[in-house]
Amino acid sequence: MSSRYQTILLANSQETQRVGKILGQILPANTTILLEGDLGAGKTTLIQGIGQGLGISEMIVSPTFTLINEYKEGRLPLYHLDLYRLQSEEVESIHPEIYWEGIEVTPGITAIEWAQRLTYKPSNYLNIKLNHHLPKGRQLQWQTIGENQFELSLLKNFS
Ligand SMILES: Nc1ncnc2c1ncn2[C@@H]1O[C@H](COP(=O)(O)OP(=O)(O)OP(=O)(O)O)[C@@H](O)[C@H]1O
Ligand SMILES: [Mg+2]
Image 1 (cartoon, rainbow, N blue to C red):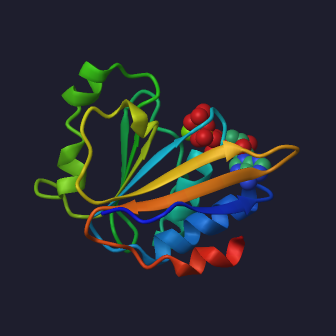
Image 2 (cartoon, protein in one colour; image 1 turned 180 degrees about the vertical axis):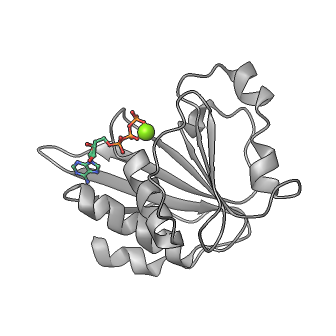
């Protein structure tokens, strides 16, 4: 089951952060967010907002060398993965399902940049596509996949 794509426009990085903050405030444990989109489209910015919404004060930066950053001080743990530099075999070797299954780790929010590199996906997730929107700003498209439909009507206020 999947919902239709909803599209919102984000005029500047503060708006991207604000959408992330709303998500961080309302999303339940065991939520996976798969992020796709252009280089520099705002994926990390959105995740910084999610961190803010969860109540994480630590600075969120992309996990370049570590591949996964874990933040545990908020309402729920945040697991931030960035697959940009990885080949499919390397993606599989980090076992991303550990995070979205939440069996070996405390269930939290798993946010994955460059999710198109995944060779398998969770059964429920929030799909977010961010792209440049000319002349400025970004277009954000979101869709829920699977049985757990998220109540994200708050985001419609942005369109
Ligand atoms: N809605 C927006 N309008 C204009 N600029 C934005 C918007 N959202 C984010 N930005 C800016 O875009 C730049 C790139 O953002 P960010 O690093 O979050 O992108 P990214 O998608 O994570 O990039 P990468 O593909 O390298 O991982 C930053 O300077 C950020 O402030
Ligand atoms: Mg990034």
